[in-house]
Length: 116
Image (cartoon, rainbow, N blue to C red; front, top):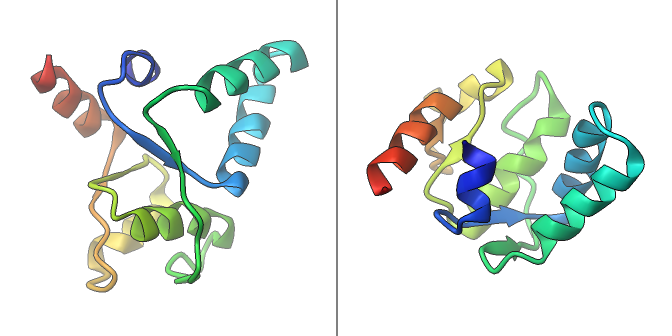
C-alpha cells in the first residue's frame, strides 16, 4: 500500500545516500540484485523523491545509532512524518527538540486512505 502510494505520487519521500544504501540492503534480503537495482532506479527517478543533505547529526536514538540517519533527514527536511514500526524510534515520542512527528505504518496508511 505505501509503496503503491509512493509510485502514485500521493506523498513525498526524502532520502539521503545512507538511506538509499539501507533500502538496497533491505530489498536485497528478499530479491535478487537485478530486481534491487530496478526498484532503486525506479524510486530515484520519481518526481516525489527528494534528496536531503544533513548538516547536523542529532544522535537521538542511542539504542540503534544506525537509525539516526532517518531522524536527521526528517529534521533537516522538515518532514511532516517519520514513519516507522521500529521500537527504537519510540524514544522520539519523549523528545521535545527537535520535533519529530513519529507515526507507525498503519497510521500512515490511514492518512493515505483519507487522501483518496
